[in-house]
Image (cartoon, rainbow, N blue to C red; front, side, top):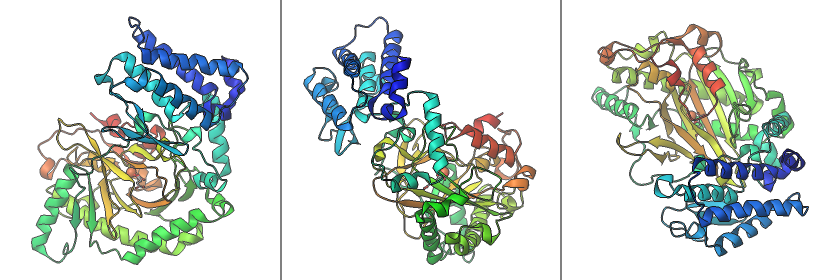
Length: 505
Ligand SMILES: O=C(O)CCC(=O)C(=O)O
Ligand SMILES: [Fe+2]
């Protein structure tokens, strides 16, 4: 088998090769071992028969099968066979069913159902898993070593995902493919909307101020996200910043390459996936980081496309941040300057992070940004088109659902970051969110992270605030420097866990 895997290599494996066979065999073995008492159901038998058949094809000398072959083969067998197509009614269809999810394979859209393990027998679950992988043509890399080679080759291009698009790629390479369970797109459209807070009158109308504090408090304590309008940042400054980032990413690769770096000390750095070598699957996204405060880069260090606007945009967002931290201080039962003056340095630093999400040829196989919480006190985000989703639980006993954050013209999205959750001793919530990959695009967003960097981060300390409304609670976290939090976040990668768990008492 090892030789077989080698002979397919990462490229063959990417379509339908050794990696896929290895995966299928080990999945089948695992399931069979876990449930040694079963008699395999017809559907599992069917999946296993496929496994055997792919091996036969391989022995006949196919070293690489086209997507079309795979789809044709998979479809014919599944629909004809009495196995999977009978599970819970229908699993693979050209038409949607209630609860079914869609997925584009090649040029076609398929609708299928992922069976919840709780609702079906283990055999059905096993078969459904095998099947979901067959449909998505989602093979793992042949080996960790091949994956690393491919990641390195991609990183060495210093041209990001945009470089792959420019090279005419028509499928999503394996390093960007995510496991199907993390790709589920279902979201709640009707039941909940992210609150929109109108900041008009925040400094001029004292009667409005108390209402605003209450609105910010409610949002920070529940969904962790809200949008703000009438925030005072001029519309042209917002649109110019988005346009500048788009221009930077759409310049020839040679112009972007000098900025390509993974050196966290550098105040200006451009790369694809900060956690490229640590995360289980890469995201379909490139990013330009500008660490603007407390000590920003000199204008000459900023790429020419963003040079003028980045400084003006930063100034405006810092002013908005000042207003938001005042409201949050009051929402904690403290005086309005409390968070700004706090030793954690909430307002001292600002990283302006420009994301560029190219349109994806197979959006259902990858992610724009994997689910995560933010390594910041507060994040103020600007997006040009939608794609951002927030994981929201309406009540504690309910399953959380993904809620869209619509791209409201002129609005900023604001969310509580991990550091503020720590400071507020869990009263304010840093909530998981993600960005879907889409066939439309590019999508550009600017995430402004309030957090210090460099020497300032080493000097700043976060610990739960136990005065104001927090006076009665025992601390839930130990104290930690901002630098330690940032390093821990980077090392951990976007693996779906919260970095705060590490500091919980
Ligand atoms: O691009 C977006 O809308 C969100 C990006 C994000 O969540 C982040 O940078 O932390
Ligand atoms: Fe985020």
